[in-house]
Amino acid sequence: MKAFTALFLCIAACGLLAGCGGGGGSSTTPGGETSTAASSATAPFGTDVQYTTDNGDQVTAEYAKPAGKPNAPALMVLHQLGGSRHQWDAFAPQLLQAGYAVLAPDLDYDKVNQCAAGSAGDGCRLNDVNNLLAVVNGGLLYLQSREGIDTSRIGVIGASFGANLAYVAAGTFPEIDAAVALSPNARPVSGGLLGEGIVGFKAPHAILFAADGTEGPDAQTVAAKAEQPVEVKVYSPGKAHGVELLNNPQAAADVLAWLRAHL
Image (cartoon, rainbow, N blue to C red; front, top):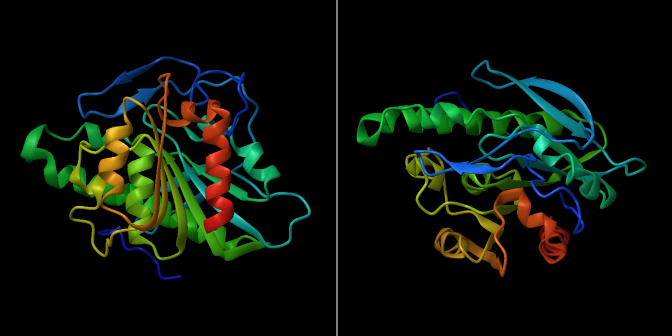
């Protein structure tokens, strides 16, 4: 797999803790991204690991591989703003049971929102999106270095801010075979989160977009930029954002079905 340069670059049954991404309430930042508290009462799903990106950043992540599965496909899961790798602790065990190795890195989205407002911060935000993509690329390299992983079958799942990052990553790294975007934003704080200005970005394919009824139009708008196979699932009534969508048994089942079909 070719490296990405520094300049470029719960599934939960009904009844799990609402918040599946944090336990706390959510709020919207000035950049338009939804922030969710990072605390969680769920036990970690795997072991804490570290890897270094090719621009020198040290990344902490959580990793686990399904027992007794010699050539497991792998998934990288990208949390939402205000969360951490532990946002997936209620979701990842279901993925492990389904036979997927799971890597959940910590991501520093705050830097993107701390750039100057308006066009004055465009260069700063694009640079920070590239740094986030470097974290994804480092995760792909980490997965390729693990024993017992089928490196020809790697997918990514992202929630909220992470959904946009998953969308862009899927269009940037050919190693990513399938993606799921939970509650993507059609008007993110940076055009880089739609692939604008990202070196090597091409319209991604094999992506499932999911959102509640309120955010369904955003999911449909972003999905229109992707190439087939693409599917959009809108769940209503009820309001759920990001990983909270997976408290809906049908949404959880749809994610697993998409992965089975495309990864």
